[in-house]
Image 1 (tube, rainbow, N blue to C red):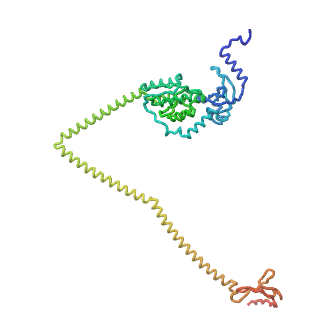
Image 2: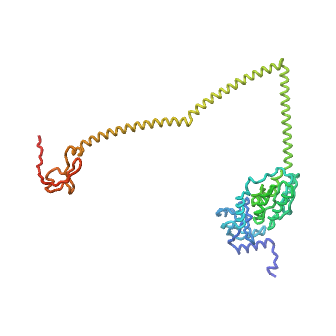
Image 3: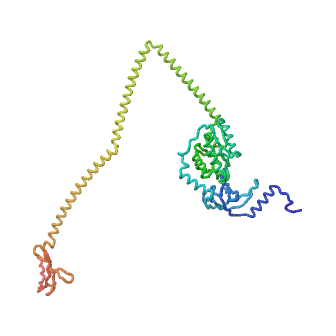
Length: 455
């Protein structure tokens, strides 16, 4: 029988056939969804999960395609990915090879996370001033975690290795799902009321934003903030952040990191104590030997002196005089230096410089006033001289001596200097020194102009 159902495929053959079918069926597609579990290994490629409310698919964006991104992707973003479906044969996983990515904004969970974070921050729940100090060597630690998870075993293993004297208790709760926030809140309240412990540690391994969503609960955040016992949040990996991280008294990057952060290394402490003890013994031995040598020297000096007390007193007086002279010399030198610096400072004193500039300004102002007064006087004298000259040649002065100016009233009102310019009956205007007259010509005699004979 050549029926396809009778053929026995190897795993490689089946995977290769599925790959050929998928890549032939979906050479290029657009897929919309929310990014989660995004990571960037050393290769520079971006690996993530694209999901909606019912399903998810793995995706990869190679480093060479990232130059076309309008911004860097992150967890919680709603995007449309354009690319090709392929099968990674070594694992048999199908995934989306992304060539381009359009951003449509944050996903619903990420948006809710950002809104709650902003609200609690505005209320002061994240302020450093309200966080409680952690004991440096806790005697008792209570873990609020799932007793079957790997995180609790990692914490206990490292804690026993570093500081076996510290007692570790486990309060079992669900750390994922709809019931998890309520169970974690009840655990914190019960521990505060009933357990004599130094630190509460919220402990859980990594996961997607949905897996860690219990630690983004608003009521849980308020319970952590109200706890009288210091709370450490050790949830997820180092890149995972939840609301509990911000409201807790301390955030640990991982559960293992929390054990290393909270507990001192006993072996390292013993080595430090031994090294310090050895160093202290050496220092004490060195000082004892030095003091012993000094004592022997002083005994030798006292033994060689006939009258040791008098010799010491004389030496003391000599040293006192020497010190007195030295101090006076230093003080005199410092006083001289101080005087010199003070004189230099006074020369550079802004007030002194300002005073000199003010005096110079006052001198310039006085010179300006004197120059201005002299110029005004010179201009007044020149003006008076010009007025006198102008007055001497002014027609008004001539009119003041009894003369008059006669002009025609009609036409261009030209000045009449000859009888031939008017006729009987013409209206004329006579300008006097003070006032004017309107007259009519009764008679006009023309007089011949006389020409001067040359001498």
